[in-house]
Image (cartoon, rainbow, N blue to C red; front, side):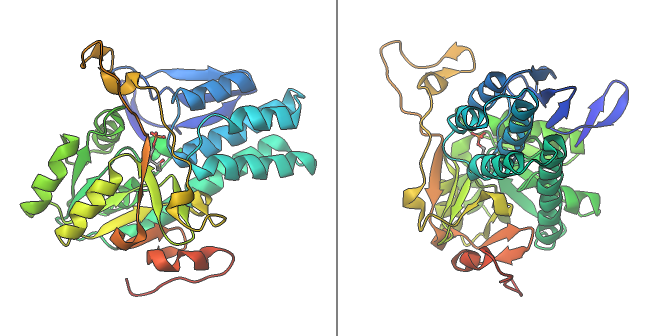
Length: 341
Ligand code: MRU
């Protein structure tokens, strides 16, 4: 991804492997500080995923792939490393997809670094393809709402929901992006807005509860979000609050798209009801960053994701084309692209 530094524009990925360590942009610190976190052991990689140094489904998968490669190089027990990394975050399917693939590669004696690098390159390449398909949906002058951060930081490069935005912008289309702030971790205000600034895309951050207001006023032309897990029937788990946006978009006749690579699809689950939803520490809700915003005696609940039923989704943008949610099962093994959307 393009990052503006004092020395000019730099191209950097969100996570990479260097000298036996897994390096990543510390997403907890953005936008105030740009710091690199270095994981030297499997425990440190697991901590980075759990504490959201790195986050976003495809980036979690890539980090886990590098973590497995590192564990193999350090001659760690493969099952132990697999379990350590697996028990970090329960919702994003990419984590389990990457771990399973890397375990097979390690057990078959493949070069582990090459396998992890090719996993990362493959996922990033797929996301660029999502950009190419998704860009076709964006007309000149479109105002697009996105939720959370499904950007380059959440993938490595390009992003999923932001890939079409980047492509449209780079192809000279005039676009405007509405960025949901995304409480409690503020991935929209902190990370998506930061990416928009780096890329020079016009945007405005809005409070999470403002999207309906702008939809009703006719100021949002389409919604594109990412996904953490998509089930066989086209239901989508994504950052908490996505469901509400989809319902309000539906009510206002605004197209609602989800963008995700194949690693996010879980064809073993029939519906979104089967997706495990992560519940994070109540502290994230009771505090806004370091500042307590609720009374000392208050408790909180903090589900990190919700499930948007397929009926609210106009289309799912993948590296193999744009599918109606009811047709995503066709992606499991054969080419079932739905044309003319
Ligand atoms: O809790 P997070 O920040 O990992 O949640 C991220 C999201 O919900 C993203 O929208 C999703 O992972 C898609 S990332 C391309």
